Image 1 (cartoon, rainbow, N blue to C red):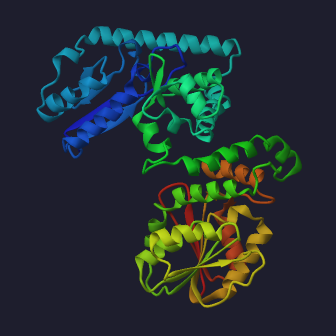
Image 2 (tube, helix red, strand yellow; image 1 turned 45 degrees about the vertical axis):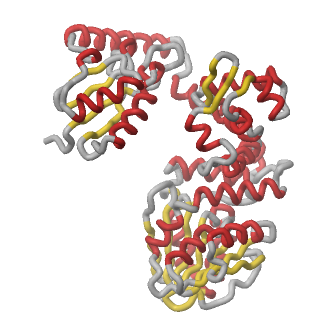
Image 3 (cartoon, one colour; image 1 turned 120 degrees about the vertical axis):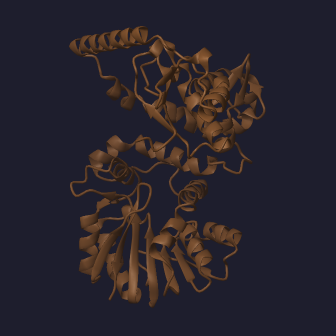
Length: 451
């Protein structure tokens, strides 16, 4: 059975630097070009595009196989994609100049590659060399730090339509030699293009990292840069059991970047939460630690009958007011300055939301919040926790386990928690029914119901 007319397999198996591979020959660019061309020609219902591991033909890459006929293409490059899609995938006529028909040679090459690879791995293991997987994890900070430094310096904006290292260094107030080294590293990472002595942004970096782009993520990603400095203190945090203060903590720039980052994460996710919970019978919502107000805004837009109240600290409320005003829902969303750990919540709410909040607090603090939320809810009201939920033994999912460490270095006593813990705390607070709602992405909802 063939669900699609054609199935395309493109090799994207990464290899250590210096070893021939399809990615090193440009297979990711080919993959992107194929996806765009297939969509542009309206063939997405006829063609399934899939990545695959090494096929043992690394010197001939990028390699692509088209099924059901099993047509092999080699040395495929971006300019070839339009011809392959238009001729082969549309008209069912393979592009002969790129087809590789020498089956005996292909098999011999693949077998030889496999034997050499296994022998090389055995030799590395015998010599006690660090496996590539471990080496890549250990050195994974290097690309990240290059990008974060570039964002902190607003380097991608400074590159503009093209400039040399000296010009860019002057624009970002940096040493020209050092700026050139960073620029070259960003070229190696595929985020800049170098022509002669001039650098320019790739379409991707121009879209996501340049000021003025509608999809600019820089301000939100500066929060990630702030987190970097906290993670550098993890050794001390593990020894002491709590975060180690850094100079950036609590500054206006830190807060604005944090809220911008949360807004980026929440604005597309909020409608999914609204859909999962529904608005039937919902009149009043309390949004604890509402941040940018993304979830209150989404509820207000979903129903004219909903009134939302955001409770957050003094430094955040003015920023939330900006987002609420921009969304045009000031008549439905009010803001209250306060401390959710101490202040009275009020009463009569249909929903109380804790979106990405519980991980900031200890078990005792969360239990107290749940207890007071239970008292503030109307009959049939719901307490909604959205967070990264750990499995029972707390070893996964990976994102939740790593994020728990993020809370170690960022808070006094926060952590990621399991579904069992949230359920136990809610029932202890008086919620009669507790359920989990799965959402796309790394976080889910835990909902406690008052009968």
